[in-house]
Amino acid sequence: MLTFPLKNSPAFVAACFAVLLLATPVFAGAAGSAPAAENGASVGVVAPDTGNDDADATADVPTGVARPLPAPAKPAHAAAASSAAIATSGVRDYVLGVGDKLNITVFNEKDLSGEFEVSSTGIVSMPLIGDVQAAHHTVAEVQDTIAQKLGNGYMRNPHVSVEVANYRPFFILGEVMKPGSYNYVNGMSVITAVALAGGYTYRADKDDISVKHAGSDAKEETVKETTTVLPGDVINVPERYF
Image 1 (cartoon, rainbow, N blue to C red):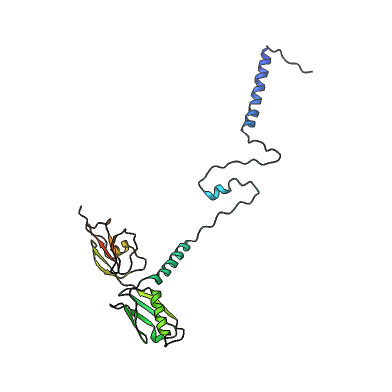
Image 2 (image 1 turned 90 degrees about the vertical axis):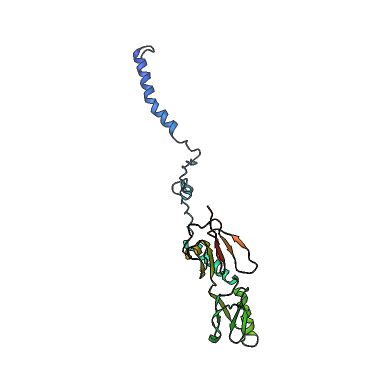
């Protein structure tokens, strides 16, 4: 039979204090542990945000469950291929002008094929069919015109291809080191044109550059350094006064 010390005795106080010391870790562990699952359901734990979307998406996946794979990265060449496609489609819409050189190919007819330049009167002179109006027309329109003329009593179902061999030059004036005319490069911008002209002078006003497109009805407009330049454009870099 167990006996207990008297309530007010020193032995009883010491025994109560010892019981409290032994019980403290037990209650602390129960309070800090995760809540128990009810009816076998798992309890999720929220993971901290790491700033990585792929890692955060898979952080709370339970053990034993397949984690989703991150989305594949877009190929680096995709943007370049898209830009190339846009550039290719833009060539057919390009309006020809004096000084443009064209590669005209009539399939299976070497004597009718070759390089032709748009003359000062805006025409291209070809064997057999004579003059073809090219200035102020697109590449596609000139191609169709040549095919129609060849098909009018000369050939049956002619196949014609027209490409721009060399674009007409552009002009840059004002506060650049070497103003003048330069060969056009497809896709160039104002800053590229300035670089070809040797760069700015110390007096150049870079915030007031203007461009006048080719054509009698074209208006001069203020542009940025990133603005695309077209064949025949006249770029003017003004002088700053302060």
